[in-house]
Image (cartoon, rainbow, N blue to C red; front, side, top):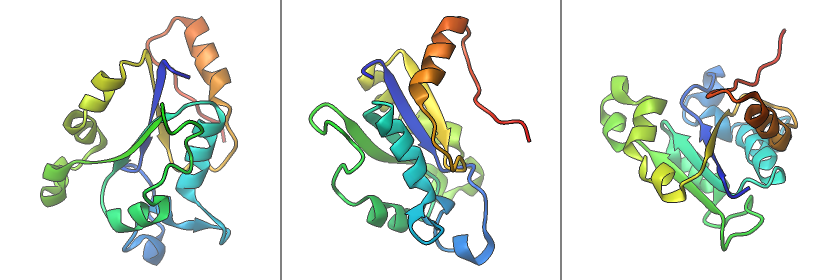
Length: 152
């Protein structure tokens, strides 16, 4: 989808005690095989979204190591884009290390890609989601913001 970009938000991920002491929840393995971020990236890629920014809060080493330097999740690396965004000011000032500040610090991504729609994806969704249906429903609703959730 050319008019959609996605931001995978690692700022509001949960804490899992000693498992997330030195790494973000995103790079923690789920059932010993996949990491939490794999679900978000797979859902985006399978929905045809190739412009993906990852909003990293801290512990960048494990995310960079997991994702590597290639574009595993991009179906078309010539036109797609995947990048890790860090709020450098927030690293030394924890109260200012928020997802909103990270987006503001790296807003060039939003302007450069000139997309009509932005999807913000948390990494806590361990499920299969077709974002094409979500986007279509959002467009048909004529609303400014749509929120995807599940009643528990």
